Image 1 (tube, rainbow, N blue to C red):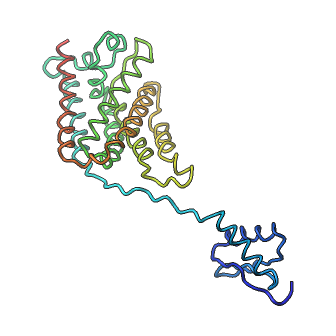
Image 2 (image 1 turned 135 degrees about the vertical axis):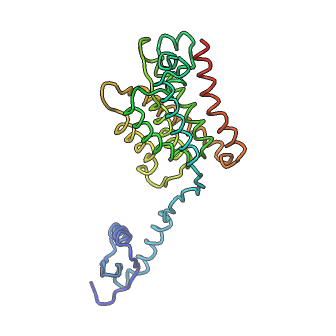
Image 3 (image 1 turned 90 degrees about the horizontal axis):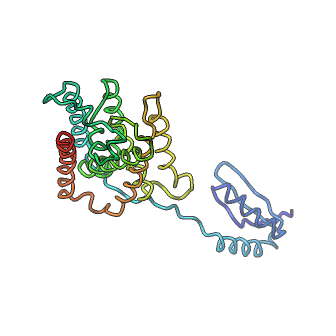
Length: 292
């Protein structure tokens, strides 16, 4: 190259220089990349400078800079009341069932029984959520339920979050029962735990609360939810993997649906209504169980 060189492009982004060097190379324009600690520059012989600038302008017009898609701001809510209510509820029902309170066989009346559910005892899909076989079972659901419930409560508010969890978990139990043999038996809040995870993943994905600029970001809530499901939702031979999966799936769908009313989630009235409806559903289900 001659001594009369002109700078036609400079940037701190070395990738930008490399891309434009390819443009000049394809146009058969002699060029050189100057790279130092502060950035890089493209230089060409003076007689090619006008042509080089024209080619680079055309490239810029055809390839405008990508503007990052901003995530939508979302006000996170107080999840503490819902967590406290969840822990108190499952501990209370554990105590009642383990002590055969009111001279009732809570386990027999409340557990999932495939044949009885198919015969019309729908309430078992709800009452089974409050039953636990032993202390280890109970503690596990307290720990994971608190964690996933915290995520859901921060998004939806305590009232709506736990109403959605109960409805999604009930749907998950019903689906799981219908898909398995009629001899299927199960108890535990784990379906609700993974419904809470599904609600969070579905809402975050559908509401685009994470960056959507790259495909890996777009599917991150789904992959993250499934990874947690696989890591925490599979265990020994006593683990009801089907209930965990159905709880997650129903929760995911529910989370997507909740994006349609996202502007109403902050309404204290609806939060109160949901907070009253959630324990009412549990109580009515147990009334139906003992009255059958």
